Image (cartoon, rainbow, N blue to C red):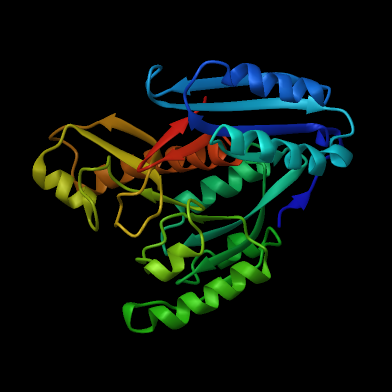
Amino acid sequence: MAVAVDPALQNRARLLVKCPDKPGIVSLLSTFLHSHNANIIDSSQFSSDPTNGTFFIRIEFNCDNLVMKRDDMEQQFAELAAAHEMSYSFHYKAVRQRVAIYVSKETHALMELLWEWQNGDLDMEIAVVISNSDVARPMVEALGIPYYYIPANKDIREQVEAQQIRLMKEYRVDLLILARYMQILTPNFVSHFEHRIINIHHSFLPAFIGANPYKRAFERGVKLIGATSHYVTNDLDEGPIIEQDVERVDHRNDVQELKKIGQKIERRVLARAVKWHLENRVIVEGNKTIVFH
């Protein structure tokens, strides 16, 4: 689904593993990679409970002639994984994920993603932008990115989502980013993209779930405001959290000032969450995430 990029990266890959914790897992993985003449470049691991928990690991490795070897490696690893109850995934650095960005009228999060992408800090292919507003069209089309204006509301939601799903297939999209897309997605839509939809919510969840969080934060007199980036599930604003951040505020800040401060937090939180997803640093565990920095 994703597109091939820089040939210099064709021998680099990442392996993510989740399995029951027990002695020898790291040795098994390193021995397997060594048997294919792979050199481990970076490795991060975590155990939820060393005596009776779950083990998580992210390994980045280099392997000569990886393009020729990888199918055989994956087939052999499947046998090892089955023997040790491993959930796993291989990711190849020479393959760039294709992304769709969804946006409404507020464009600050979209603009941050476009800027980070242009800088080369987000290693992705922006395949298409979808919006229920035409506000962002000029800035998107100026970069040669296809833009679809699809009006959406609760009365036509099924038809709209059917069209969006067709577009995701047509553009071979790997990841969906909701950059302040102010529409609730149906379970049917979400089921097509499990753990592949990243949202930015304009509050420090679980506080102020739903609409108008800045107004509600002002009325509550909070001293901190924040933003949360998470994977989308069928529970509104309750999916596995990838990243959060906050800034201090006080009684002098009105709703508009809170919103302006909050938008800056939203931009950086979403960009970080997307970057970590693209770099295969996130493993979902129930309604939580393990994020390897």
